[in-house]
Length: 496
Image (cartoon, rainbow, N blue to C red; front, side):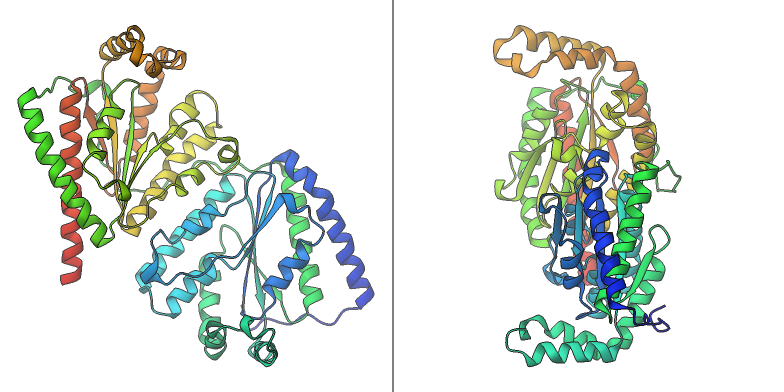
């Protein structure tokens, strides 16, 4: 691949410049079409240190409207200092519909660097390769055009360029110790880059460009960008089909079969609430000390008691280490990106707790039933969400998902109480009544969701909430038990 790469032959300068101008004009003319067709484009520029990645990006964007593109250059954070999942910065950087993002090095450079520095194990490396392939496929299936370019130069060319940078006081800062180390270990890096491209080129192929001739590299990059953009605009926005993947699923009952009769006395409730909240506060200290991220997900029927349940969980926690995220309908800038983007942005740092009041599962409930996404989109989402949660748990997160469940009679009584009580009227809307009319359709959707997304690593718990106090105690028990187990596993991993 790289070892046997043949350099481009010299070309006639005037013809080369003429083609570059023609391609730039085409690209500039397509920007309005990108916006009209809501086509998002992510251009990943990887390659050797001193290969000219920054210069290539500069030339690619030279004639584009700066309002509709972004250039992203992300630092490589040492694994020991990382507080978020590996893909977090890249998922955050994806473009909005109709715009372009040019990424100056990305998940390739970051992962290869960590492998070469022995910051991660081979097992973790293979795991992240799988995560990258899933991430790229999710972008493609969500309608993104992703172009991956590797800018290649040989060891001799790299040495000349690095030496020139180091010899000039004004450019010496551009040749880092990492760049010099890469040059020194050129053959090992070449093997690592080849392996990476081999393992991540099936869904979205890699394009290797000769970086030794800057004008030719620019022309070839423009050719790729223009041709792939034209093809995407002509074909229409791609929508990926659902696919099958085996996940370790747990057996879940249908909602209609859940016994909603459990209750708790006021005396037992007060006693156990205090005990559980005290223990939860203690565990929060350990979670922070051990840097274990915790993600609690709440879904459920309107008026089921999610808010009160969340308050009892959040109360004993240090407010500096917990965030409650109420999820409403997506804002325009959220709607214009892949649907998981707004949840990637809200993930907690390691050692912190995030409580989601409504989640990404809106994709297979309200968005499914109200027609806010295509059938392909919501059917594909089951696996995508399982993949997302697997990434979170492989990062080390505790992921717990609660469906707060009541029957229709209880919901009607609570709706009526809210409507007839002035200080509660803000809690009831016309939309709540409309959703109630669709209870049978929602129940079918929820049953399917529970069956297809309750995994061993991110389980669903159906919380019986006709008695709100019982529901709060049961939820707290589950959380306390899960955090105790996570802390115990952490200590065991250190001892072993």
